[in-house]
Length: 64
Image (cartoon, rainbow, N blue to C red; front, side, top):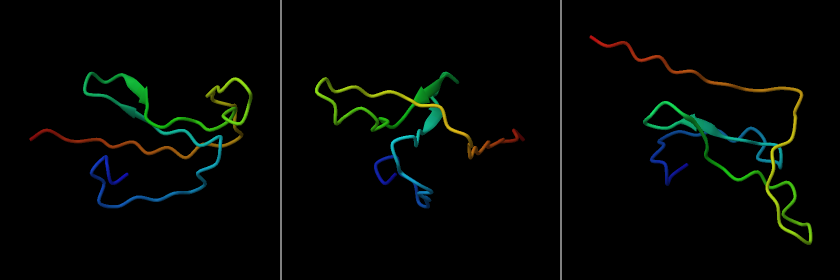
């Protein structure tokens, strides 16, 4: 989060199912982190897995 120039951050879990997605400058959702599930396998993989809950944040900026 420091590298992304955040002044405040909160880590709710950080486990293998934790995924951070942000829209890039073109408005396209982009995976920011690398899910850790599968990295202990013989053939390293990184994949998302289904989870039962989500915490999402939406920011709306009003133009003057």
